[in-house]
Length: 166
Image 1 (cartoon, rainbow, N blue to C red):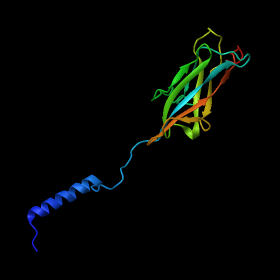
Image 2: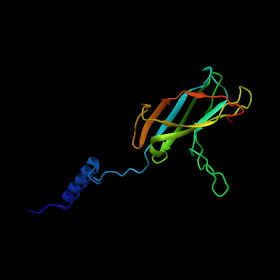
Image 3: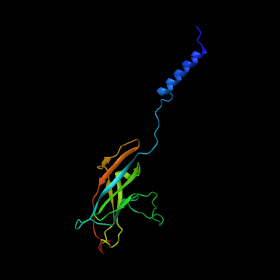
Image 4: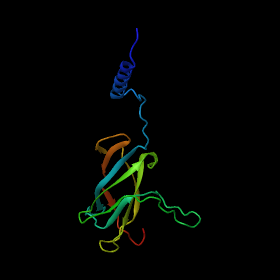
């Protein structure tokens, strides 16, 4: 039995077309490259510890260094800008920063709190607090390496500076 060349060519074309349509040309899974990341949102209110009144003009932000250490007589330079906000007249703040895997040491993120308005509302002591996002509210769609948005409310109490506790 002899099959014509035209029939074989047509049959090969149909089979190749079916393979392309069904996706058999590459059955291996696609590799994903990236780093796990999430948006960390911190919001809350800053109040005076003595009278619970809101404090305006306080800068709050994620800190790359929990404690500044002089190395060779030079302060370390930040290699990346971190999110910060200044409190409004109600003492409220709200800021968001994207962090990648490895940016956060053991789950705690250092947050600096500093009085930047001078004597306008009194002088308050600067401080660094550690914030843990384990109990944060998760929102946003998780997709690929993106883990969504983690929101945490953190109210902060500051004490006024006195001549003895600067």
